[in-house]
Structure formats: C-alpha cells, structure tokens
Amino acid sequence: MGMPPPADAPKQPIEGVRNLITIGSGKGGVGKTTVSVNLAIALAALGQRVGLLDADVYGPNVPLMMGIQDAPYAVEGRIQPIEQHGVRLMSMGFLNPGDKPLIWRGPMLHSVMQQFLRQVEWGDLDYLLIDLPPGTGDVALSLIQTAPITGAVVVTTPSEVSLEDGRKAVLMFRQVKVPLLGMVENMSYLVAPGSGERIDVFGEGGGKRTAEAMGIPFLGELPLNPRIRMGGDSGRPIALLGDSDAESQPFMDMARQILKATEDGAKPKGPSISIED
Figure (cartoon, rainbow, N blue to C red):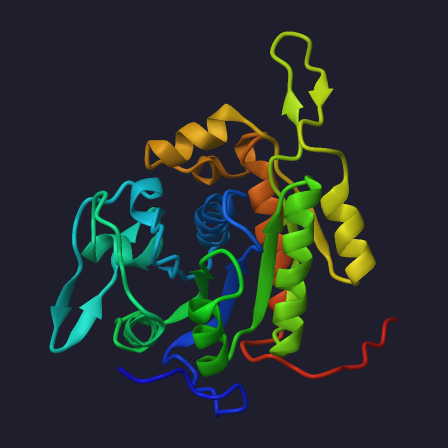
C-alpha cells in the first residue's frame, strides 16, 4: 500500500467530474452525514448530476441513510456506483456492512480512497460530494492532497465545544489551500411541540458568529427536528420533499448557495477580482 503524496504533489482530476465538494467537521456527532446526504439530494432535485462518496470509513452511515442494502459490482475492472434518490453512491458500508468494525491503518485507507475516487465509474457528474471522516486525519488529507477540491463545507453545532473543533477544520482547509464554501450550523434550535417556542438547546448563533469571524459564508441553520432524524433512519432523507416542506427547505437553500458559489467551474482558483455593475 502506498503512502499519501506530499501536499505539493500534482492533483489529478476525476474523469467526468466537474466539481469536488468535501463536507467536513472538526468532531463527530454534529450531523455531517445528514448534511451530506440531504445536500446531495437537494442538488439532484435542482437538476444537477450528483455523486456522493462516503469517505467516513470508520462510521459509514450513507447506505443506511439512503436506504440501500445492495452491494456494488464491477464491470471490466470498474466499480459501478449504486444509484438511489437520483444520486450515485459509493461507501465502505457497501463492502463492510453491519456492525463489524474496520481496523485499518493509514496507508491502506489511502489506497482504498484512491480506488473509490478513480476506479469507480462515476460517469459525468456536476458534483461529487465527499463525506469526510470527522477531524483532520489521514483520510481527509489523503483526498485533499490528491484531488482538485472545488471547495469545502464545514458542519458544526452551536455548542462551544463543537465550534472550537469547527474552527480547526476551517484552518485545516485553509492550510491545504481548499476554498471554503461555508459553514452549516446543525441542531441550531428545537421548536417546542404545542407552543411553537424556539429553544436554543446548545446555544444561539454560534455558527453564524464563527463564520463571520473567520470570513467565510454562513450557509444556514438546521433545526433539531425528529423528522430529519426519522428521514435518515428510514432511508428517505427529508430533502426528498424539496421546496414543499419547511424542514427540507434549508437544504434546498444551501444547495442553491453551493450552485451559486461554484458556477464558474470545477477547479480551485486563486484570488480574483469581482467587478459589479
């Protein structure tokens, strides 16, 4: 198994893929995969050709959240992704289903991630979303150092513990020169049944303040809502309801912001000058 290349090694595009978007977080348990699957579905609902690579190898939940029990197969040495809800999917969870833990070291993980990127028949995609493992470890760095990432989304909650780790994720992406598309605050609030009162369970406005302080876009708040959880548990993510549902709407809005931010193409760009009328 090979080791990851140095950070300044040439980055090879993924054939047929216009935009590579990483979804990361500084810590686990913030709903990163919930954001990933719903954002992928929302982009597909907006007419985009979308793939989702579940790179969270130690906790691959995409198969469960997308309602898949099938295994991928290969044709002439190329792995065929499984398509569900209009999104092409690949996950370690397809190959290592159930509760069996994955006990692999960094070089092996690097090799598998490269196979998932380059030996999967993704076809022509407008967006390939990559659901990273939490933190700033080997898998995230391996992917970032070998593929031209269009931009990154960081998921946090309003709690100070989560925000501290979210800032680390932002700084990691900056250090490896990946553009920041924005920050998402998950579990922002709970709406009390009956009264409709907003309850800020984990604090108020921390994600927006952090995004503003770090000079990155704030993509929006997501409520702590049982319908979002039930959608993921049942394999029918809430974003399938599109613009017609209050809990789905934030994901549609985020998808539109991603479209707007990436409409100029697939590769990371340096500083640019914007001239407005």
